[in-house]
Every structure is written in C-alpha cells, then in structure tokens.
Image 1 (tube, rainbow, N blue to C red):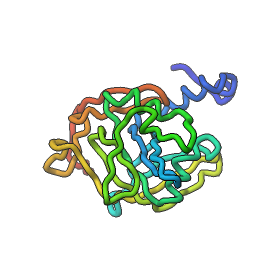
Image 2 (image 1 turned 135 degrees about the vertical axis):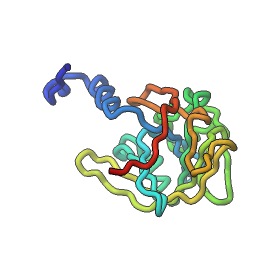
Image 3 (image 1 turned 60 degrees about the horizontal axis):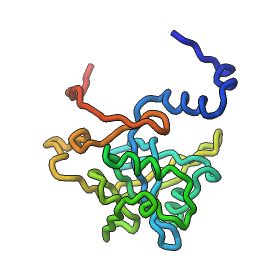
Image 4 (image 1 turned 90 degrees about the vertical axis):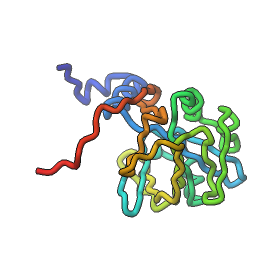
Length: 203
C-alpha cells in the first residue's frame, strides 16, 4: 500500500491536499440547505457533511466551515432558528453544485441556479421544490470546533415531506428509488444502488 505522512500532505498544494482529505472519509450524503436572509432573500447552500445524531428526539447535524469562508447559511440559521434540508437528485446535480459558489448574501441562489422555491406554513425557511426528500429543521445548538474554526450545527427535525413510494413498511426511506445522489470530496457525485438490507445484528 502507498503511505502518506503528514509531511507528505504538507508538501502538496492546498487544492491537492483538500481533494485528498475530503475524499478520504468516503461517500457522503449531499443536501441543499435552505435559509432566509434577514432582508427576506431565500438562500441555498450545498453541504456534503450532514449526519444523523439521534432518533428520539430526531436530531440531524451538519458541519459549517469557518465563518469567514461560509458565513451566510450559519448566520441566517442563528438569526431565524429555522432551515430546511433537501436531498439532491441526479437531474439537480449541476445546479446544486453551483450553489457552493460564494454569492453575495443579497443574492438568492434559487434564482441564480434556477431552482424553484417551495414554501410551507410549517417552516419559515424555503424548500427546494424539485427535491424528493425535504425536511424542516429548528436549531438546537451551534457547537464550535475550536481546532479549525468550524461549527457543528445541530437541529431537530420538525417536519418531513417525501415523494410517494419512497417509504417502506418498516419506516425505511428507499432513497435510491428517488435517484438521490451521494458525493465524494467536494466536487464528485455518484449514483447509489442498494446491495442488501440485514436484520438487526445481535451477538
């Protein structure tokens, strides 16, 4: 096997090093997070690091980059206390990826990339109309990760909307039926295919 030491990584340019470390942890869920700016503009950010934190209460987290690098989503969430999670499908990939561009806060990524806004009375933040898996989130806490200036944003699921036919009889959401994509690194997107499901493992 090839070996890569910290000194090796430090010798690379930051883009090569970033691609290496970002793809090291493997395939990740890919979401568009919808928020509302204080001036009423609907913002949309792309995140590859959404993680399940618990089912009761239903908690989901995501990692936000340092404020100077990605301030809008976190600021909007802290101000309003609400945001949405929207799964990305193959037809949406190019538009979703473009949402990672650093648009000004007063620019709506929905308009910039031509994704339709969907509003619901249950949540003041915008949903992505084309997404087959959408959920409303209320902020629980923002946990600073002091070592690198990032933040773990923890929210509670306050409502879920699924396209018909995705929910199995045991509550399992069959994401591959919706064409939901996964990502590797920061710019690579992949289809998924179910290999198998297994019973609850016991000794």
